[in-house]
Image 1 (cartoon, helix red, strand yellow):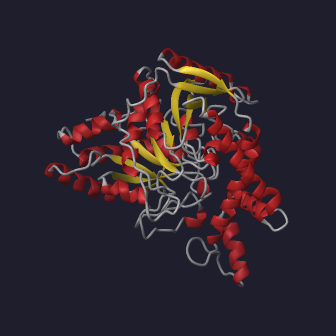
Image 2 (cartoon, rainbow, N blue to C red):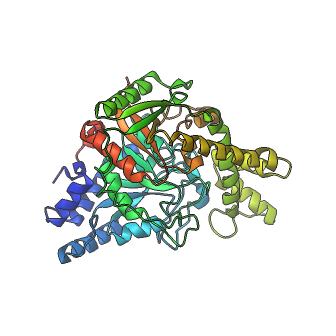
Image 3 (tube, rainbow, N blue to C red):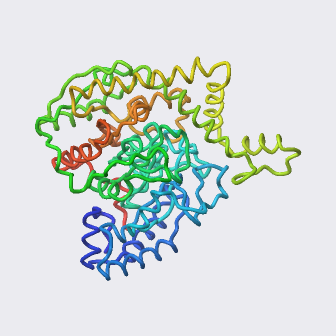
Length: 492
């Protein structure tokens, strides 16, 4: 079959269970596409063909025996920030270019236990620091919709792999928008769950109080299937919340759009730099939801101007602490012929980390230093609480909050945005991580250059089912999520 990559997760599951095709055939189909198409997209860092075929054979045996999980035999790609036993895990960095993990991240272990087939590891901004996937030691990934544009970041490899039909689903991580923004740039659905909903064990840390793993796929339904596998409490992760997990697939029609109150923050639609096409497509999507019965309510989010400075104090401070472990001693990159221990530290870190990572370490170290800790870091944490309270006050009157996922569509590769310009591109996504809330991106159209535009819906704590349900019903009434880039239509 030449069109297996056009099937949804539900269709793939049904096809495997009714023996219309085997997991091995499906896996070989994707591996063939990766070999032929990915040299143009450059989404994969490591392709695990041998392991994938072995896992496919095991899934076929379980399917034949009738004791397989709903997703058994379906391929996926993992962001190269999740540790994978026996497979290189680089986090997009020279620092870890030789690191082979001795264990699996919980997300990876859960996917394996469900019988999902790992096609490989996909590219990302180094240590998840960036919005373009250009900050990777192995080089930039291209956006399947326009190969001279970025796919977004830091989960750009995950987004590009799914958008080019080189994997039906992928894992991503979101520290300040790193699932939602690349999903927006690549025309996908991407869910950032409530902080603590998906285990961070084995997920290489950038900013521990902000990082959260989640699914990336074409549709809300496909995301729901993967959420059913990866969500849940993990005793190995001290920030994991022991709270009952919904059946996200069963709840896809569980939220009534009719009567749903959608908050429209007036501050979000008056941001300098908001592209006119992005604004128009988002407003059209909100009108569609209104036609479906939703009620649009204008709200105030008065802390908007504090999002970027607060995030870019807290995240670098945590990065400075987390990345101190990469010292050239225990694992990872080590400089050649150090003259003493201090030289080993300095040169291993200077040579092993890229420019953006070094920039954020320096900012974070400065913010945590004795003379500035109270003036910067502590004050940022206080403002963070005010941002959270701003959202909670809004949720007293509305069910969800709507916004663009990004102020623009995808940038051109090599656009050479200044760090400040890049940071301001995260204006709509950062606050969700600061508050620990869930949020989802849905594709809602294209700009004048045929680049995808995304709508972001932000929910209250633990409202993943609600967000998935709203987007699923929107996708039953629109076809933006079914649109494919020309490169995805190529048959391998």
